[in-house]
Length: 200
Image 1 (cartoon, rainbow, N blue to C red):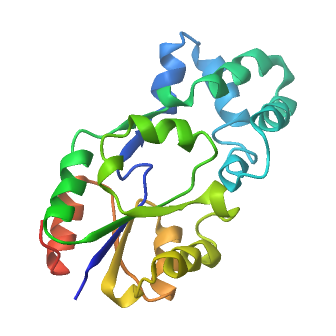
Image 2 (cartoon, helix red, strand yellow; image 1 turned 120 degrees about the vertical axis):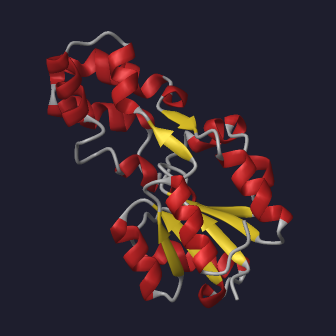
């Protein structure tokens, strides 16, 4: 019987809306593509989630991919709260799980900016804890980050379900014995949880 729900944040509880942000900045298509390739779609973006590099170091690395975009790249890092927007359903979803007796934990790839962002998440007061990648210097889908969560909260994977939007992250969880639900549409994810016996 499942007694624990583990949730990713990006694309599960909140939208990562970098494309919309770049459009709001008024950049033309070519500029948006150049910024994207040097940052979000580039090789260094994920390293901020590991929590080893400072924001300044990340800006320098990303700017090295396209020096002509350094000013725009710096701006992208200035206010990450505009890149992450909580879904309307998230607070009620987590509150409902808690009301039905489940432990709810977060397992997400996030950099140090999470400390600022979490205060704006309406769902945050209702979770029981979690492991965020920068805290442990590990990132999904590395098995070590799942093991960190298991150890921290004494979780039995057979009694837990992990929700994520990425197949590689779900595969790692499965290998450790977790039930998994891929989140593409919220309504479908809820159906999949109910099929596993989760009360929502």
